[in-house]
Image (cartoon, rainbow over the protein chains, first blue to last red):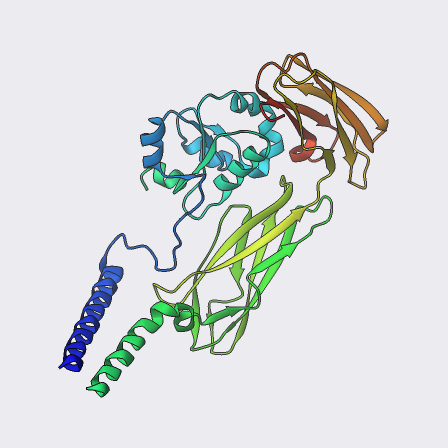
Length: 146
Length: 226
């Protein structure tokens, strides 16, 4: 009696598991916004999403644009200062006073999800003593709604 | 009773295999190494690094190769590879303007949609032309106002002269002392007061030929910790 009961339970568990896997697989294949299975969630405490900026600081941040001069000229956040890592020594001396005396948190952005320049610039700014610096998840593509 | 249970367990195990061991199911291209570290010489602006790989399984193709910045370009030696064939991704990294450790990545995608990308990375340790020690001069809030010194050492084989220095903070004075012309300097930094928290910079103008490196920086601060 007991063995039969356990058998039924196990069968139901297996059935549920299989149905869950099928549902998950369908979602993965068919859902338009399904992320790649290999993507890891961002766990960096200095990474912020656009929604966080609006919620925590009501968008009152000092934007730092870590992209190229061409990309910046084509469009940037209002008031953004351009500070690319490969022009660090050229650009930072003229921007440092504005950055160091900012009473707003700094948020650095670059092109998109795969670009690492924003994180790099944010790390470099923290290294030289700037206290509240974050990097934006999704970068300009996220800001620009692309 | 036992046999159907075993069948069910085996069925589940098969279903779960790709979830538990995704790499084994999809990775056809195997790279010898996914991280290449390079130590360029002084003044080098362009580096070429290679990532050899083997196509382990069935014939496969390269779907896309993307880099994390415009300073890095990467291409495969061809588009499709037979099973067991060896190939290579060649990356060219323009390091002009960079200092210290820099890492840039390449995303290599093979096969059909849904295959896991392979992340390749180039880590470069760009030698600094000038070494400034310490990186930051600090005073504690209320600490005695005493001058502190940055030691500037030229690491480049060519002599580098400091043309001028300036503080970004008006109430912090800086003075340059030449220890050995073209090779070693000292910069004395003295705040007028330590009663306010502040963060500042010493701008150092040099005669380095490359525009990206002409301006060097040293930092100072007054804070609670000191």
